[in-house]
Image 1 (tube, rainbow, N blue to C red):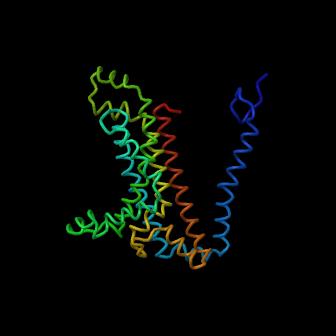
Image 2: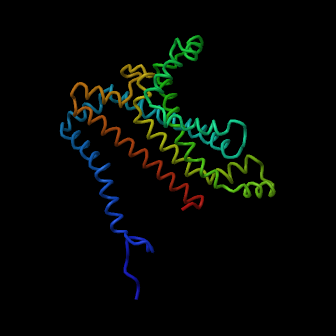
Length: 280
């Protein structure tokens, strides 16, 4: 007689029902209910007003800036975060522990402090901003300055996600590939990196998600010029200060929908990468 169908995998550890119930209750109270309340508040203003706010040029420009700079910053972090994690794992050098600790500074440093520091450095009268000014371009108060701020706060997510995966990759497989005649580049791209791809996508997604909602480190260096350097979180705050709670909820709902769609695509790519490289 065949065993009855079950929605869960057999486990010797009891308490699945209780654990699942607590998980769903916590998820609902902390995440789902607030998001549902946000969507309902945005829907309460009516379809016409919702459409007018969603298609307002200022709203579209702020959303485009927030998601565009966050995507660019996450891409840069994916490249340099992988490089930094590789150096920290594979090499031993004087000051390595200091470099390793410095990676976590954006976690510990208040975002407003980071924003003020970067604004002072990259402003037209700052040490780096003045050099850029003499070369004919600006860093602070432009989308470039926003991207730099998002790179700063997102880098640790990529490094700390990739680092333990690289530590688990046995160097024996690299030596075996070299003995079989593989070049160093081929060993890196076809032997080592396939183990890192899922973690790299995870770090990219975390850095992107953090960048989309970042506020404190950006407003000081952005300049906050409407339709030029005004991010969506700042526009939400402006709506709230004007007591336009419905308009703020609409912009927040649009950010939620776009973020969910992009993270869903990233997670699908991550699952495909795990399946392709045998990390199911």
